[in-house]
Length: 281
Image (cartoon, rainbow, N blue to C red):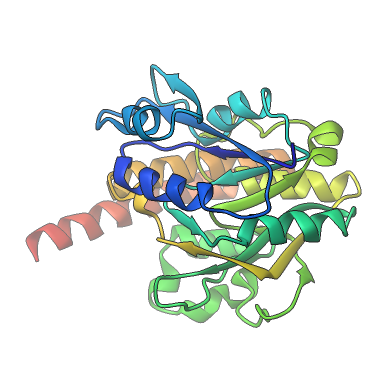
């Protein structure tokens, strides 16, 4: 088995149906697909079962979060590579075969992301530097809403998406992992319910001597966060806050963790005010 594809949907049945259809139209790729349903209430699991009975379906009685749900399938996966794929992605018929071929030629690449484009074929920026105290403080305090350039370094706004390159981490819904990485560093860290789990994994890869790559000759359409539209901003911020603090507690000096923790109440208040203003508007 070349590839094990893992999708963790929640209440996105039509998007999942489209994603699965595109995957099964792929050419020259030997793969299996796991769908790990995180307690959907809209019939998402039933869609997979009805239209694609060959899918290996895992149904959770509650929302276990991104890391734990993916780990359920990784433990059963037979592929030489593992692809963590968001349910709102559309592969082309050669996306998977190109990625497999590229990774076969690059043993040093333990994690690789392909080129992501939107429905208008515009490149979606996904290369990231590892988080630092200053850029995360800026995010908490909503500074980029006024001065976007403050995150230019963190977001790698000078990155050339037409060339293959080593990166710190890949953000996005197409995250391909070599079996070598699973064997060396293990599964996703389940303390991250949502967000920062991929940055954490990339950091673990680098610490173990592996590499993280961006590869542009395979493309995938990203419908940009359809899986999160059902979650209100305050809940998203809570997930983001919890994961950010856990990431800094794990990888950074204790003083940075405590600074971020002290600032977060201000950030949450700012989010509440933004939400209130939007409602009144």
